[in-house]
Image (cartoon, rainbow, N blue to C red; front, side, top):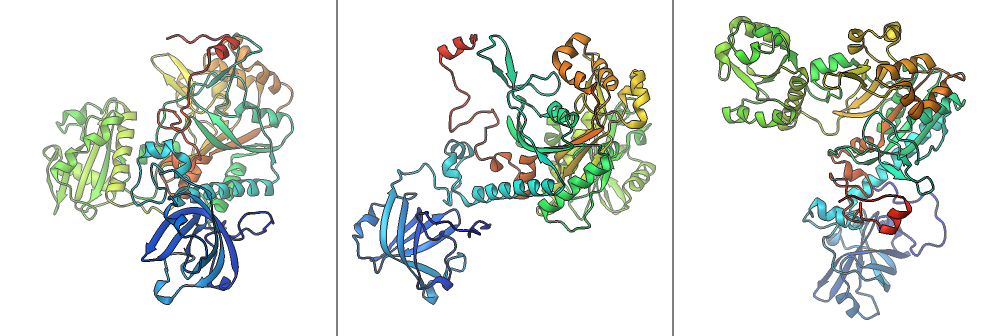
Length: 597
């Protein structure tokens, strides 16, 4: 991508007249000035060439008409920054490089200057040998010179522009909210900031501007958005960072339909989709039943089927042990996709083990005959029922994930399905399958703690037709109560989520009570917010895009570090700046802090 190759408006004052990616045969005969890095130097028996590189491309420099001292070229190191002035000329037919945007021309150098000489770099950003990720993170500024990362920075910039343009077109106001704020009791751990002027007290970096954007609705802002930084001190994964960017949206007097229509409009602009594009809708319950996850990758089949009661009386103890309490899910892989060896199906245990799975049961159907694995426990009747559930009579392999914990069976079957999708090449990398997942559970009951936790956050409205049951506080009803919550999913990633918010003071107080928070705790942590609700609050709803994950999808990468200019490692460290780091004892003293060894 070279979309920034030619600026729409040029201003005087740059050291260069053109970029290294925009010279074409239409400019033959013109005198140009280029600035960039020495990408390659070649001495072909007295004929000297340099490829000069910048963000926008490469241009070949020829020195056959250069009147200066050519000895300077022998001393020129790779990645040194140079400036040249010369005349554009057409390359001979035999020397045209069709793989370069500037491959039809070269510049005959008249003036040459080394602006900055480079030491030998630890790796070449455009080298054929890929450096290790840790080395690239340590020298991130060198890695950023690569075409891949510069393209992603441009994709990120364009995505920000698309978000802003769409939201401004819909009448939104961009508002900045504080970074130094108040610690919150729900969700991940906060990053806390000690106060020097208030010894022993702390700010918290926001996990999300949740209460602030709701206060903006109480304050008559009507339609708010911001592209904000959020911070969560949580265990990291490939698609998580301790600090991340979020496109935060809140709207007064809005229904779910309004939010979904707005988000669909944004997605159409981001992904350049047709004007009649609509996002399919699926309930949370169906997503778990069919895919085992609330963020399914719908680009391929291999859907799950629940087969828990099918094996009653089969004699297979593993499956019979989950009938009363637990879950058994099956996946069917047609023989046209793959005929697995025993070694291959045995290896599936390593796929499910990280999710708590103890193994993957299986059997094959070949020419209508059952063989392998658990085949001796599979009757003709069981096979027919499986074929009805999977809507097939094809030959192939049936795979099973069963566990006394439904969550383990779901996540194991999900992991196996995703593994098979990749291994069997069923996924089109440039395909995007969007999905609304609706009606998430409002609360989760923890047996060990004997209390409820908010599945989303404590400001989410219960499903409207369940509001009376919520206020009555029946524990059994609360355990299965849905919320007015919705997620946008794409290709196995949660792009973002939102909900209708609680806007009545009594409902919010009931929510805090249900979460086991006493009056004093509520007053200490949320007193300002509960009081604000008492002064007339409009019904409101919101949504937050995970901006980094959105850029991951646009850039078609599965590593979140690719889409952030200066990312952290999986251990939340910055290898380049050596952060986090120690601070001076005097600083700790000023903050009234002491570090225990």
